[in-house]
Length: 401
Image (tube, rainbow, N blue to C red; front, side):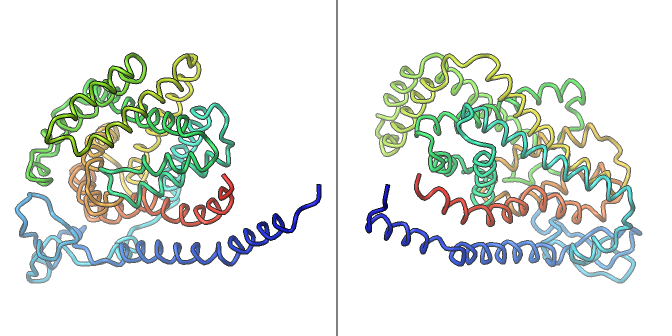
């Protein structure tokens, strides 16, 4: 069939708007921005413990939180050379002072493999939850753009709202997109709810909560923050499971009744949408076979299990860790802190939490700031770079959807 002049003009206009030059401009700008953020973090002055215990600075705990904030100059004061236990240097200088061996290279490679397994698990889960409607390439795009959105938004907000837009732009109906996002969140939280009791059984509770972190975050004991967060996650898992799989309409009506109260009525429109999402999700998911759920949750376990292995592998690259199981278990506790962080990608909070949770388990505490930077490269900056590359091309390819 011949093209009409109008359709030809539309096609030419489309190609003009999404030409290679126009796509590459935001990619280059995004890469430069992500590169600047990474370099800024690597070149930022920090106060690291001197490996020989002979530094030029001492910690004064200016903010009275009981934990050294290695990036805060007010926390440290200069003393006579050799009489302090801290030294001032950048993360690049610390990394350069590390004695790199073939063993170090092997464990860093394993950390990269664990990161890849985490993402492959997410991609496979996206394929399963979409019933194969998303191709492997589409699942890759959705996964990394979702991570990209999460890196740019405060952790407490997350990227779920943007994820629904991303999935919908790939051609799936709103009901299916809503179901995928809700079930993804449900499975992530379910993995956590199951893992915590296992950690208590195999590791115990005495060593899980570092005493130096008490009152370091929002003035609360670390155990209190954890139990409040865990209770909230448990309540969310129960509520979503019950409302989606048993009584979706009753849950919607209960929400609407509660939000009739005068001091809550302003949020009623948003709650109506939540109720509609729950009902839509229930319709999409009821009747799914056990194999569907087994594959989806299995992929979730692979993703999160690999995610928590990354820090173990990074630490193993430079020294013998006294207790790998405890190191792994503490990450489950730290995750609650990162989950409620008000900063994009948990920036700032993540580095302080890393030092507080792991410094008593690592023999060479002088390297802990550098290890935190390597961890952030794999868990945060990686998704900024990949998302920056994927986003413009994805927008062009999905414009017609």
